[in-house]
Structure formats: structure tokens, C-alpha cells
Image 1 (tube, rainbow, N blue to C red):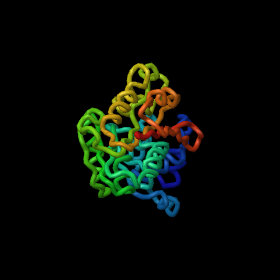
Image 2 (cartoon, one colour; image 1 turned 90 degrees about the horizontal axis):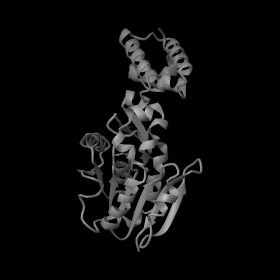
Image 3 (tube, rainbow, N blue to C red; image 1 turned 180 degrees about the vertical axis):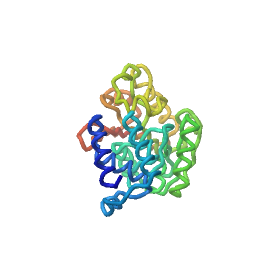
Image 4 (cartoon, helix red, strand yellow; image 1 turned 90 degrees about the vertical axis):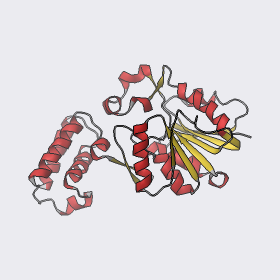
Amino acid sequence: MTVQTAIHQGSSLLEEAGTPAPRLTAEVLLCHALGRERAWLYGHPDDELSDAARIHFGRYLHERLQGKPTQYITGRQEFYGREFAVSPEVLIPRPETEHVVEAALAMKDRVRRAVDVGCGSGAIAVTLRLEMGVEVCGTDISAAALKVAAANAAKLQAPVHLVACDLASAFGPRSMDLVVSNPPYVALDDHAGLQREVRDYEPHVALFAGETGLEIYARLVGEALRVLRPGGALVLELGFKRCEPVRSMLASPWRDIQILPDLAGIPRVLVARLP
């Protein structure tokens, strides 16, 4: 089997199964099997696959056809121009979450210490540390997720403090200038409607917030009010149809509330400040 044949056959199988971006997925999985970059494929279409590479490619295709996300097969995902390790212990970082980073970076000059609540893979915390150069902490209730975050911080040389705790409970009052979070926001009743890749493979502790999907937001707003210093800011990623319910939680003393859309025009990030 040549590289070109492998891509063609893999793409056809994935397309028949209704897998999004079948050719790209086939190329990524083949690269993972070969230990090569995608550019190499285009320069070596007639190279023969070794027996080991063919077996690995077949296994990766089977896993993807069963619904396993490509990122969990390859163990990596790009976020804000950097490659992060991912595993089924953490959510796969999405491009939409980069809007959270952008909102936080806009406050760079006013931040000395920040915390990413529910840091998962560490994508936000590591990115803020490298882009802002300030002290950044990351918390998660999952010890397994923190191991992934620690590995990413070490690989990318980002000295982030990682703490196992519920939300920001490990920190004292008025200890932070910035609280950021992409919290769980899926309602339990929405379980059946999720994509198979999300429902069956991503960690439920990072997905589901409770009966309404607003439970973690409500707790986060209270935690942020406790740990933020005067003038501090809260930056939250918003789930679908979560904008107005979350905004309504931010009564006095919160001010300067902003709702920032993603590239599709969907409300994606909420920013609020304390006086």
C-alpha cells in the first residue's frame, strides 16, 4: 500500500461513515502512523507503507470510525499556535476558546496574578503565562487532568502553578487580578443531543454542570467576587444560549460587562470588572 492509496482508501471509508473532513482526517491519522508531518505526504505519494505503519493506520481509522476524536487518537491539539498534549482525561481545546485568551490579553497591563479555573489540559493557563508573562495558577478538580496540564506546562516551559481544588477554593480573598474559565455548561438533559465524539469520549466532569447547565457559572461568579482584588476582572466562556442567564448573575458590584462574539457572531465570552 502506497501513501497515496492509503489516503484515498482512508478518505473513502471516513466519507462513507459521514465523518467530517474525511481527507484531512485520513492524512492526519496517516501522519500519526508514519511519524511524519503532512508536508511529507505530498512529496512521497508513491512510497510504500511498512507493515507496522499499515497496521497502525488501520487501527487509527477503526477508532475514528467508532467515534473517537482524532485528537485523542493522535494525543495532541493546537491551541493559540502551540501544540498541546490531550487525552480523554481533558476536554479538547477548541478554537472558540482562543477568544477567552484574547479577552484576557487585553487586560495585560492591569494583571499581576491570574487563575484559570478548571484548567483541564492547561491550554488557557499555559497560554496566558507565555503571552502575558505574569503569575498564573490553574485549578482543576481532576487530578488526572492536572497531570496533563503539568506535562504541557513543562513541555512549553511555562511555569504555571497547578492546584487540585474545587473552583478557586484554594485561594484566599482578594488574591487575584484576573479569573478566567471555560467551565462546564452543558445541562444534564442535553446529554442525548451531544455529538457522539463529545458524549462518549470527553470527560463528563468537564462537560456537565447540572440540571440547567448554569450551576457552575453561578458558583464561579461567587468565587470570583471573593478572590478578585478591587478592579479585578472575570472572563468566562459562554455556552450556547448561556449569555443572558449568565449576564443576569452579575448584579452590583460588577460593572463594565461586555459580551464578545466569536467569528460566527455567537456570544462567546463574557467580561466583567469589579470597581
